Length: 502
Image 1: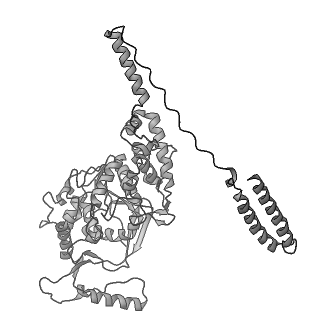
Image 2 (image 1 turned 180 degrees about the vertical axis):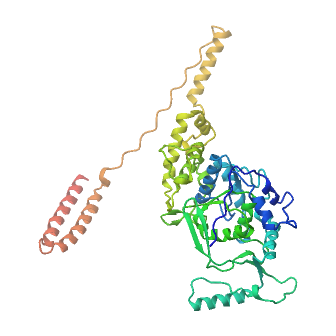
């Protein structure tokens, strides 16, 4: 049974782990010490709190990604540490064009500025995994030399046969038969292969700051660390980067909990200390779990709808975390002082998008009360949906009427007369009276009946038609003939009356 190695302490000096960064000279094993001793010596020098947000650029940044970035940022800043941004794009099939720019833009819009990242200070750069391919290959070769990993030349056809036989056997977990590990077959140069990690027997244990102590049996197959195209898998690249970048705390969704035992094995294989794990609860919606492929819960969508970034941070912070005290409005500084991993929930959180509008209104009320100048500035900038004010431009004034023009002409003539004209000049003629308004159209006849009385016929026929059906329905109560006689006489009398009036 494998247990967690001792964690780094804040009193340990920082800097020796820089030897593993690609920008400086790497640690090499001397004659009197093995590589693992050298790695352990460098890893023991790590100290301080360093968190990272490592998204895959497979879509726009959503609630789940924003909450992971927010919790990592809050924990690092509360403990005086650093917050990193790393792009994990080792799988080209999941990479979406423009997704990386959207992630950087939305983090900046929300106020979560990383201390290190692709577009900032690069102490352990590069921070894009597709640019670190040689680093992963180097550490995979070290595991090959130590016998902790091996090359696999099995074709897809052979692997599919193994899986088919496994399905027929009824076993729960598929395990690779380690054919290439035990084979002495020599393959020609250039043959395609993958690199598998040799999974030890027993179980793997680690402590999670949210879930508690976790133990997993090592009943899974020898997993890949390098794929056939030469790219590292998520499990291997994530582990190597977290160590080289001195990550002390890993905060991520609990969907990655199942891959943590594999990463712990890699840490132990290199003799590296593990970071402290904190797997955050999932975010549920009434239709399913929130994710990049579910609905339009992207930050870009809410930014276009002119929501406050403070309201979105307040909203996602409560999706899995409960503050120690009640407060109507939480801004980033309030969240930083109140956040703690002790109050992060273990169970999934329900997401009600309608609550964002409520929090958005509360943040606007607080902003208009505390800093009204900022509200005035927003209105001037045309942010109308935030404050629910429609600032439509004023229409141009109408052109002057003929009456106004004549009045202005008369006033100008009077000014000219008083300024220098002779007293014998005749006064200007009075303006003509305004034209009379056009006559109103005659009102339509009431009831839709014209002067010839034709409306009586229409009304009578309609009543006769309706009452005939009513008579058929009430055949056992009333006689249809009685209704016909009464209404036919009424219609005849009405027609006579209309003829007499005409």
